[in-house]
Image 1 (spheres, helix red, strand yellow):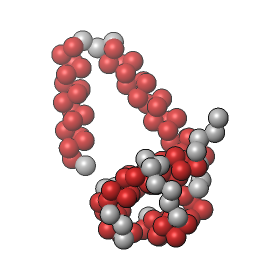
Image 2 (cartoon, one colour):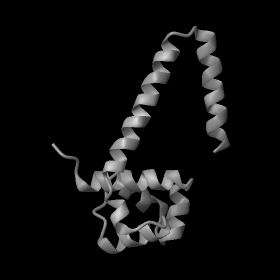
Image 3 (tube, one colour):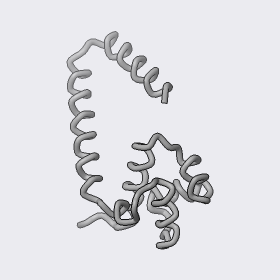
Image 4 (cartoon, helix red, strand yellow):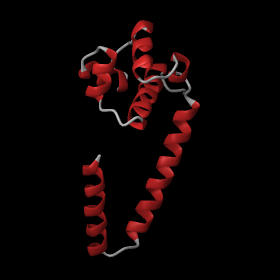
Length: 113
């Protein structure tokens, strides 16, 4: 069964926002919405209007049609999933001490963002 258009749109907005290094708060400020609205749109909890889609597209500096380019979602998601699976396989082959070190490095990298 194909994914709901709101789910796909929300994923696309989230992907573009993250690619640009924006938080939900920053995107909300740029588009004139509250950050909780952006979160609800990304989670497909809101039936967003065309006008609001246009405002979010402008804030992300993309066209409205770019927000509906779902094929980019699946490619990004598939590549990310493969990378995560590869990492998990490497971690499963490592001893516990090494896994903890890797975990700490990952946490440091994520804190830098």
